[in-house]
Image (cartoon, rainbow, N blue to C red):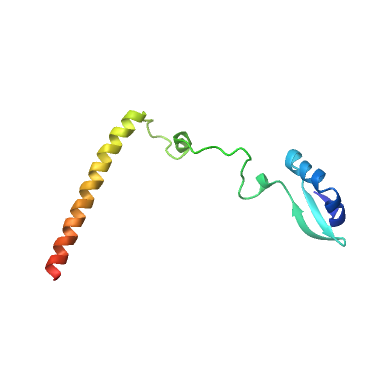
Length: 106
């Protein structure tokens, strides 16, 4: 990791940032000879992001769902209808139960 004084960094900021961005260079920034900061590419940080962000896709779930069969869109929509119907019936039951228990408590 190269050391660079704050004055030199200010004078050559564009050039230095280009080296960091394109070459992955890292610098220790010093003030009066003492380290005061580190300059490194963002992709090496904990957040690890790339400039070209990918739009989320269903395919990105494949890593999570390893070992599960792939399902076509049509099959997925049929399963979703079944699921929605099931969830709707559960919600209705809960509402009825809630209304019944409120009627008893009054």
